[in-house]
Image (cartoon, rainbow, N blue to C red; front, top):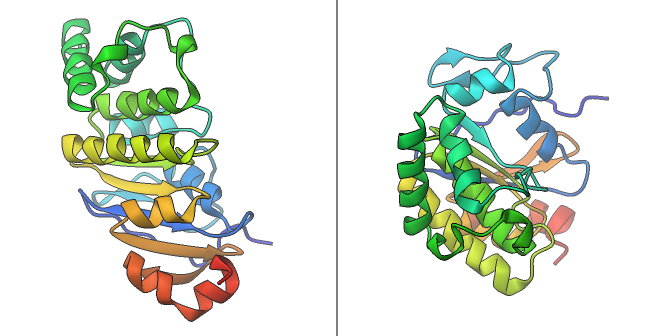
Length: 222
């Protein structure tokens, strides 16, 4: 059984592409393939025309492909600013440049008030904000967001949506967004791809996806 079958995905700079589908649809598998955490048996991954299919995650990141993870993977003993600085340092920025990048990002994303707090003291929602900021600090060309709203209240989800929109404006990156909260994905996405058992069921603008009979029947449950 193939986790993904004949799935083709393209993303432009500054565009947000949302992936939705039921559990087991292949969303996380696709993100893992794009970021290099899962090898492909067939098919390929290209970044701005360069074949990166066999590149490890770290090399893809240095080329401008960043991702976040559902559980953040932040360093709890470090401050918010220090965690964000690590995003810049990972792509070989100097310590001074990393500090400048972190301070600018925290201000632009509305997170400056928490800059000196240890990450361990933050709520889950605020930690997700920091994860996005750290990824953007690496100056990505493309950003993969893996379940950023998981476990968040409606209020925290709305705040995260604002941070993500600001991050996209700040970086100009193309974004692939997956989340189980369909409304969250549809609100933020320019284009939505619906996966079902590893295949593309539908693709189009959010409003079009909401009206798609096949999507409503198979997934939205209306």
